[in-house]
Length: 191
Length: 412
Image 1 (cartoon, rainbow over the protein chains, first blue to last red):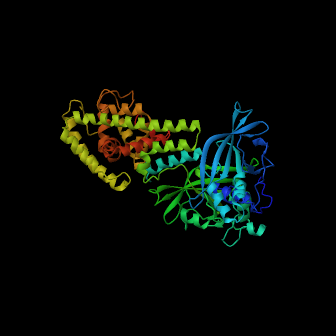
Image 2 (image 1 turned 45 degrees about the vertical axis):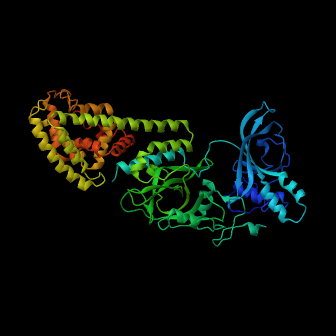
Image 3 (image 1 turned 90 degrees about the vertical axis):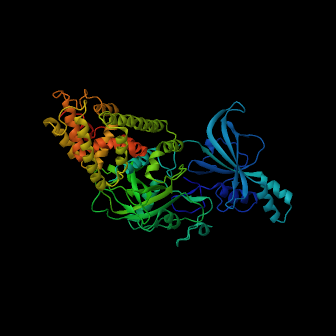
């Protein structure tokens, strides 16, 4: 299922990166022109693909697609629709609590902006935060300004279709009911 | 490149960034457990063996770590030992608590073929049956025993494959904002927890079920209080002053908890002896309670004996009470006989004289076990609302087809 061509892992290992990993390990290295290791996320640049066309182009794992893209100021337009920002932004923090990036949420609309039809396709767009890039650029001796442009140039995206299925790590609703019934057993039938 | 990305075998797992061990149930069963059972070498030692009885969930979490990245779930092999010679459930006890199975086992399919079963267990801290439920959940996967397909293997999660290797996943339940400290508090906050469950699963039907459960429990609770006060009325009108009533309260309050059956039964017996004396005195002088009050007539004897035999322990008593709570109309009618002698205790057409009521009541009071049923209501009322709630809730889990359900109001 997964497209980790160069990663040799036993069955059961999947690409489930944390936000921090996406930003610090993948996006930061991409922006810094460092080799990504493992190099699993493809670069789709300013792609025109609809979300359902990502299969085979982006890294697919568990109904989620990952890819690098160029940052745009305008709405991302695809063949059949466009991505619209939901206006939600989250800080991506490192394990030490430092802000390393920003996570933006977008929704895919079918048709032409602004009269498109909203879909269940969601995108998480990760940006490097300025501080992360500037601190790194300072460490490199080369011209800071040019480096900074590079840093802000890339985003890493996760696309998925929202639905309510569980991934198996959570209890099913039926299990929850049984769990609550267990309470009754414990209390009313002490034997 | 591959060597630096692979997982080293000797405990020091190294997973490339972004990758997690997130096997499907099929992978767990078909790849890992199958290899384990057939003693095949598994390339990389990602799933370790764990003696479930020796490790607490939080220790497993440490032992089954893969790499250094944060994990939400942990995997291990466990060898199921023989269950205890008695009892139907496998007891998976640790030093600090025990794993308790919940619900039914789920069949795991692969390409429409049945490959195994999944059992869900919850970790309780403490000792059964008084453990405190934790947020730790375990899914225990076992390969299907293909040899006996005819066996009903899903009954309460136990089947014929009691021995051998299983592969387990443990994780902490999400959406559980606070730990429930005790069974009592859990019964109080039952409704709150239901609401939390709504958060975690958005199924409309389930929500309705749970809301109904919560509501009906509350109704039963309230109805029970009404019944209880109605039951107490005749004692009051039969000549007890308020002081006496208070005395009764004290006596009831001194009762031990329901969880110690032995001491409870003796206390109840002595208390009932007192009650009987008082009742006899008052009933003899009472206008309402005329007729013989100490002996029972033939047909009712049968009923009483039947109740005696079936009410031999608290479990049976619980059921009877629960069944009464189940049918509120019936229960209130039964109890109302204490205040209204014109209503017969049993719906027995052959015995419609009013003495009949007392014939039934008094033996109830006299015989320790069956009178518990009656005094139970009173006790309930004064013990605490918690008990009411508890038993009201328990009633919802008992089916109305329970044989004890109609003992008290069916003709003999």
